[in-house]
Length: 277
Image (tube, rainbow, N blue to C red; front, side, top):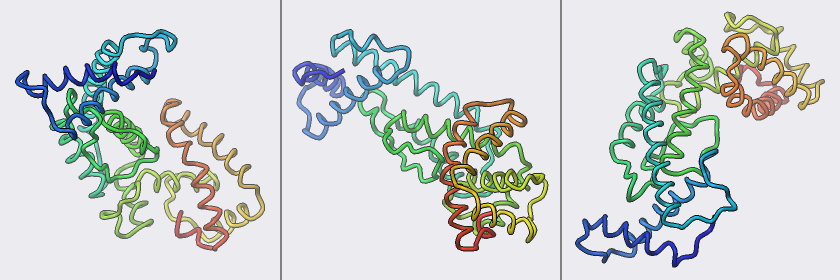
């Protein structure tokens, strides 16, 4: 819901008083912009919070919308920290420095410096480790929470396999995987997809020449959309059998199947499937 500037300015004024400990309402233009951003972020949080926002047809005062939204921001921050603390004890970075630095070193710094009241829109971190979900439009705790949830899902997927198995797959894909900034979950997921295509046991890491020949022919003779649909159906069964039908994990990983199939097709066209699987 949109509010006029005259409805928002008084809220910024009150926030400025708190910022200056009621000593003054005189702040720099940059600080005023920051505080206005904080107000808008909280109001946006209200309307984005599923199931909790008032009816979109119901006009509530901007001040009240800000207050409720600020409560949601605080609650989301607590939930994000709680999830992070639940993931961390069994977290494994598989010797990948970027993942370790971002999740183990970076996230605590976010919670240490995150300013819920005066700058909730600040993400603080660059989040160098890439996840399989596009969160570029998110900021602040919204972005951090989405990142933590994604890492949690990726960790759950990877935990099916022994750490040594994952590292074998990663090292086969890239000898410099420890310093790589690629998403390691995707690399293992591509490995799984290859085995699903071939109907091979996941205990087999090294594929044979006949396996690559079979996939080469399949990508040459089968429509890409048909391959994608087949894999989506097969992967759904895989999730049901090995992850207790975790729909959140299924949805998260399935989003990348289309892109992976396209890349495998391109690799097949260039006779370099070995470089991907």
